[in-house]
Length: 110
Image (tube, rainbow, N blue to C red):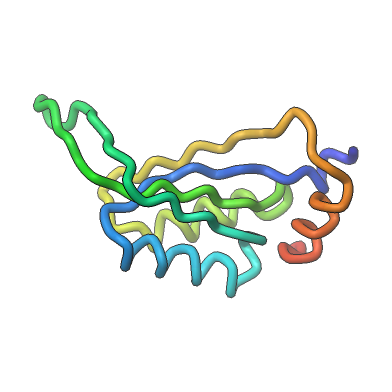
């Protein structure tokens, strides 16, 4: 597997369905993500500005690839409503060849 064709998974959370859908739609339309899976029902517990907070969120699983990852993260930061959005990039250990080809077809080089 060539490293420049490697699919990546970007994790982020959103506060509501509208922002999650807007981010998903934009990233796929702009060719920065092959797919964005929205997982509603997440509860996050975190420390923010010295206080323990609890929030209902929607987890996004953004499928992209190495060559467009920087652009994907930049666009995600522009679209995201949070002051400090979660943006974690996960590199898979194994990816099926057909899925890797599909992700690459959907996310052309910039």
